[in-house]
Image 1 (spheres, helix red, strand yellow):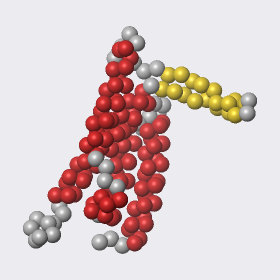
Image 2 (cartoon, rainbow, N blue to C red):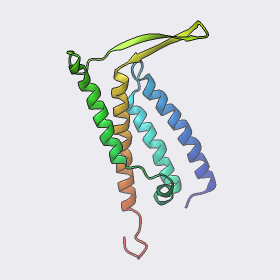
Image 3 (cartoon, one colour):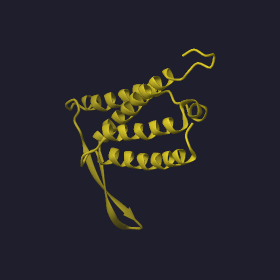
Image 4 (cartoon, rainbow, N blue to C red):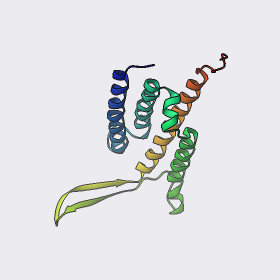
Length: 150
């Protein structure tokens, strides 16, 4: 059983973790970051919620199938890596385009579109799914059986 302070701080940390995790995911093509470290940070935030509230309480509200996240992320990353072959290019070839962002007829900035972002997104889901699958399986093994056994 944890205190109200612990639960409140865990919620705040989860919000900050998720925002920074998405930021790391999005900047991965240009600066250090990307799907792996963004996924690790996301998994840490969700893991903290599991610790603060307990697996059984979280399972009542939200019970995702983490190994499906792993599988779909791996499929998405693999398709992204193989898709250049369909266009006659090399495996894992990355493409990019810069598009102007206009607001009421004025150019306010540029949007850089990078195909490697989709690979990073797949890696993100692989890491989140894999780490949280491990955390939940190890955590559920530690829960005592209500009939007195382990």
